[in-house]
Every structure is written in structure tokens, then in C-alpha cells.
Amino acid sequence: LVGMATLEVEREECAAACSLVDRRNDRCDLHCLSPGCNWDNGACNARFEHAGDGAAEACSRELCPVPVQELAPWCSSECMVAACDWSKASPACSPLKHTLAACPLFDALVLRSLARDSPALTFVKAGGSARGFGRCNRRPCRSPPHPALDPSCQEAACSVAE
Image (cartoon, rainbow, N blue to C red; front, side, top):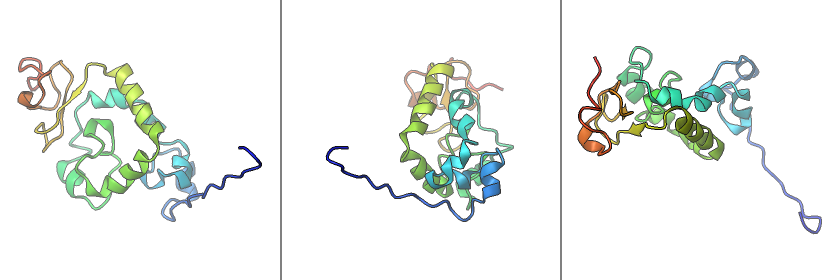
């Protein structure tokens, strides 16, 4: 800083719902994923660092059923993963996604992981297995995409795996 200038940074408080126990349990607690809670002390890092692996998989509908992903009044930890398109349709996850978007390091981690682990991955923009969820990785898709929506996805390459 020039000329003895100072910079004041306002510290965000951690949400009351995120206890000290939550921040120290080494489990990814989505309600602690904020700057004020020190991003759950890094417990969620693997979710972003290994997003490339998850993005190539189908969303587990046993862990993340479509009604939970789309209608639940909470942001499901099982749905807020790359395989489930970061709980794309969940209004309950919107505030968390807004918080994450404010920190470009999460995008950088996810993009690095996608480039490293799933370089041929192409996301389907609409259609897919569950009202817009799905991806095609030029091998048999594990969740059914709509080939017409992605020109890089040929009909044979995007057949539905049984």
C-alpha cells in the first residue's frame, strides 16, 4: 500500500447453524460452507478437487432422488455433487451456490479436476435423465442424454447403458 494507506476488510460471521463441532468434524457440512465459517475448515475440498471423477458418473438416485433434488426445502449434501450437476434444480441450494460463486477458487478447482479426470466430458444442456440432468462423455452415457441437444454427442456414443 502506498503512503501509509490502510485496507479494512469486513469479516463475515459464521452462521449460527454451523457449530464449532460442525467445523471440526472433518465431514462436509454444507451449512458451514462459507467464508465466515472458513469453508467448513476444508472438509468439503475433496468434493471440488475430485469433481472430474464425479461428473463422469450418473447421479445416484438412491442417495439423491429427483424429488429431493428439486423440491426439498434443504440443500442435500448427497445432491450437491458434480454427478448430480451441483443440485441444479434445487432452489434450496441457490444461496450456497451464490456464496460459492463469490469465490473463484472453487470454479478453478472444479475446472482443473474436469480437465484432468474427464477431458472428453460434454454436459447436456437440457433433456437427459431427470428433467435436465445428464452428461455424455463419448462412451456409453451412464445417464440418458438427448443426443440432439449436443452435436458432439453421436447417437451411438450416447446410447443408454443398461
